[in-house]
Image: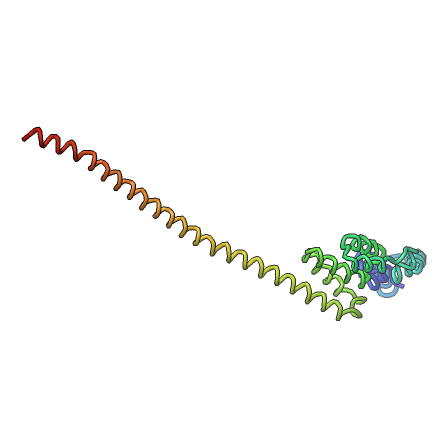
Length: 227
């Protein structure tokens, strides 16, 4: 068994890539030094390094075999209780955050649990966290364990897209209403200003007529005195 390869193959963990690369470089260097360019190193040194390399490989092989159950079936290997059924029950009751907590625990034990990812995406959608729901569905699509649930994932993606489209349409409608209300307000302000101007003009006109009436007796009196 190649060191680092099980983590990459079964779990998709890039943390095993450096160990796999170093092991490949070491074994190729030893083979070249032993069979192609034996003059590089002393034969005794090459044999010693080979035996040391074999010992290291045996140790890494044993560790990989012991950790293989945790890679293949982490929930059974860890002995943790499967809380997916409890999370689904909470989801059906409409307790979104309780279901989310249980699903997060399930994914901490087994990050490649496709059903937990699918239900978690539904929880995010129900709580209007659309970006998190899309990321969760993308993570599920990247797993080979999620291929068996492609139909359910497709349905969830359609529901998410429909809700996002409805939200965008509502925002556009609200913006359109605001834009239509602004000209109406400006027209109302203009009408109010015109009404105020006309009323002030009427007041001035009435005040002028009153002043003329008040001045007319004085004019008659002055005319009588002059005669």
